[in-house]
Image (cartoon, rainbow, N blue to C red):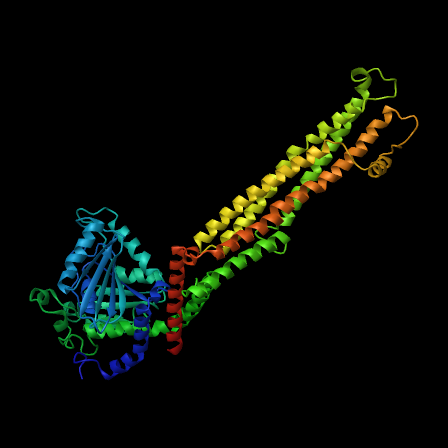
Length: 599
């Protein structure tokens, strides 16, 4: 059997070996796994007029733009997708535009139109990608990227650095280690010195992912076949994937409108009697072998690990999202009860200090109440100074008809009242600070508990704000009342006497004088400080934290008496879409993992 009569027995065995890998890639693309993992891609590199377009049309069965000079002006991603149920369909997309067509003869027009749109009419290039997806029962699953042909000299209408631009564009694609480099080189040139192989060697010095396609074997000068065979047999530049001699349609065959399918069956064995000259179907099988079988043995374990890693990440993301409300009304109501109960439990635990949200709330309040205590102590030193000053100035400013040693109690009472009243402002400041931190943590719990349910979050947030405002007003009233009571300048005699003794002032002396007043007033102020140091924080904690939490829970439970459960549990559309996207991604990864495991 000749090389051109059909696949040989070796090719049949090769097909049997490579078919599982082909099917795997086919399955991977069909389930959309290429959204998560980049599958092997082939980048076609070659000099201008090296036969790149001819090789691509041989593989795809579709005529692409061809000619002299620069033909490929934008990178073209050619996606071949085998579908036994589809005769031939194509989708071309670029620059946000998408066009569908079902006539192979329209490919050239659409590609040229895309290049003119992206790179402008003429001979300039553009880095924007054109994607041409062809689905057919006659193609094999492959993805190839056709890149602009390598050039050295700018022609009219091109920038002087066109060669550098093209080289940079090619390097951008072929440096990816998962990309197979398809170096297209005509046989009738010095193969070893071509730019295509040089660029391939720069990014793939060991030649592990480069396959050389030698085109135009019919143009070799008589007698030069030996030199070509030296390269093909890997004796000049070693490539693990080797070299393949390919004969595509020539210009004469194109002019005669010979079909690609027919040209693939013309025998070319006479060109190299000791080496096969492949046509389209042979090239496809060889490419599939090189791109899927050999690298696949290394790539598949890596892909398996990557899939498992991404699957773990997706499952973790899904675990953070609730499964969503049930569809059955009765189950949905139970679900609502559970959602609200969970929120209420967290609010209650927060009010007791049993859980920490972002920061330890009780530690934050303790620090703020310590500041309140420092404020009282600072005011106490000021109070002592004023009292001593009043005593010293009493005879000059306040003494009336009384004898020396007698004093007007009202004068000193007024001093106490005035100085104690000055503490009301910092007490109100402490209240506002504590309210802000409590409301912030309540809001955080609401946001986290109802992040999937905008209505519940809105209602709870509004309730929290309203309740905090109401409770804050209650505390303000109580603080005002407390300071109004302090204006009475009162304490139990026993308590006052004990505190006076601590200040070193004996009470009940027969010859009491004003010299004892500073000590007595200090003793009284200590009592006031002790009352306020605890009373203000206790009022704030009770109403702003404990009672607020209790009322919030009660208000949220009132929602259970309503009949619009569907509206209450209406999910955020973005959350639902995100969950569906994650679930679809998890399903793809699971399926892909199963397929790789079975292989």
